[in-house]
Amino acid sequence: MPAAIGDAEASAPARRPWVERLVAVLHLLTSLVLALLYLAPGALLLIGVNELTNEVLSVLAGDPEAQERLPSTIVASGIVPLPLVTLLARLACWVQRSRLEAVFGVVEAVPLAPGARGGLPVRVLRYLFGRDAWSAVLYSTTAGIVGLASGALAMALVAYGLGSVIGGLLGVVLALADGGLTELLDSADLAFLAAVAILLGPVSVLAGLWVAPWLVRADVGIARRMLFDSSQVRIERRMRELSDSRSRMVDAAEAERRRIERDLHDGAQQRLLAVTMTLTRARAKFDRDPETARALLAEAQAEAREVMAELREVARGLHPRVLTDHGLEAALPVAAGRCPVPVRVDADLGGRPSQRAEGIAYYAACEALTNIAKHAAARTVTVRAVRIVQRKGDLLRLTVVDDGIGGADPEVGTGLYGLWDRVHAVDGHLAVHSPTGGGTVLTADIPWEA
Image 1 (cartoon, rainbow, N blue to C red):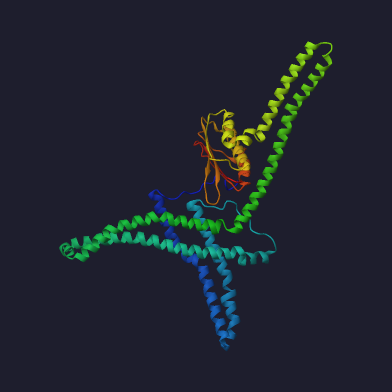
Image 2: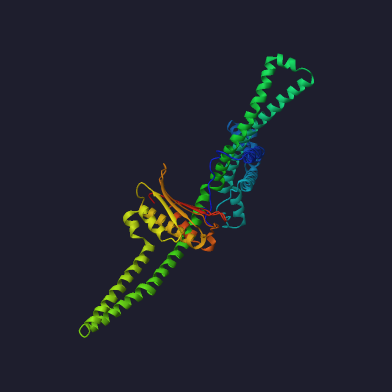
């Protein structure tokens, strides 16, 4: 299943339940503990490089003992620790993947198969010293630094707040128990410190709970960029998606060609044959029976009109003229009018995108309306088309919402794969949210100048 289908981006944590904030704090504290594991590969590598650098500097300074120790130092500090460095880094990446999947559901969209080229020694060397291994070292070190900083910040705020409140209250209780409350109140400094501790403690705890989701969001964002969405992963994922998409589009094009051929053969071609035969009969009766000839001509004319209407219906499925002449804002109401379910169209683009973008959006809307009519059991549908202004390039966003039974699944022939292929072919994004019993929301973001 393509990664874009069913995918939903996490929104900024402006308001989150307290339980989720507590989970975020626990995640950061766990990151603080695991930072030792994450930083271990980089620390071992740094220690080895430092040892080698000092030895080389001693050799350059003319130390004869350093010259004798240099080969053993290279082996002990440079060659031997390297496998341990990369293996620890891969372990750290595995731990991080497992954590993010278990807590936040972040998984690789397309699992990458391990490289199988070469014999066993080549595969072992590639596993220990290949590009993936050193990428793991880089991510492990970055994750360790981020985990150490964010975990320490969260722990400092929460622990300081709780400690301040508990310490301040405990001091007051002990003063009351010893009868020393008067002395405490008489001492302005102690009273001020106790009041500040009791008042600022909850503020510190609330600050820690408030900032925790943002720190977790940064941690997950770094993991997405470096661990799940590195350049190599993106290239391999893109190649696989393009390969799958190309195969499906070839199959879809062949199926569409056969459908058009069947429609023309069974419909228009047979009707044109009937028109030809009717004209032949009319021509034979012109001299002997003009009235019958005129009736046959009228019949042929009516048949020709029906053929023209049928051909227009076939061509409408390819690219409607209203879309070419008047754009998507005029074409969407026409598509909605052919849907048996009541459809509300809201299109305000403020201009026309490229013809390719209009065609993809129109096809997506038609396919979505067809799916709704066949499978959704919906009572109402809303189709929206808006222009999203962005610095990196405007988007044409098409949204189709229905109140049907939901549960849209690309595996059961609902046409979602075809939609995804068309949108993805122009570097667009298709998201489908379809919980069972909760209706379906289809959102297609298409580059404005696709």
